[in-house]
Length: 161
Image (cartoon, rainbow, N blue to C red; front, side, top):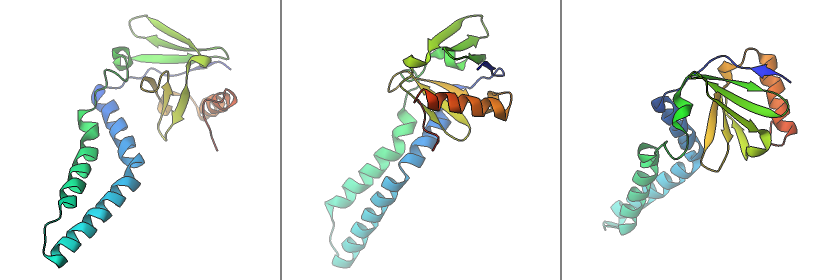
């Protein structure tokens, strides 16, 4: 397996947007549950004509969880190198990132904890918080994407099914 991607780049703003969207999608059920509980609490407060302190707690929790992506910092999660223009080369042993300034990052697949594939991108996690971003659009063909997916599944880094 020898795969080379096209050159790609992402800005910190774009990456923050991707992470925030993913966060909101994962937390959707929790938000719905919290909004239902808050609505019930408001309805009971109106019916019983009394102020309930639980309402303040629920509203505070909603505000907190909605604001998490706004104060999230990317510096601890990804390197400044990830915002440079780059391309990737993959073979059976190594995942290599080639940056526009000529520097290379070469890693064995065993160094990845897991790989998360969303519809338009991969997150290749090195630690629980640090990852490399790889857009699906950077691949030359559908065949390369499929080969890379099968290879990652063989390495038990990703679950396709």
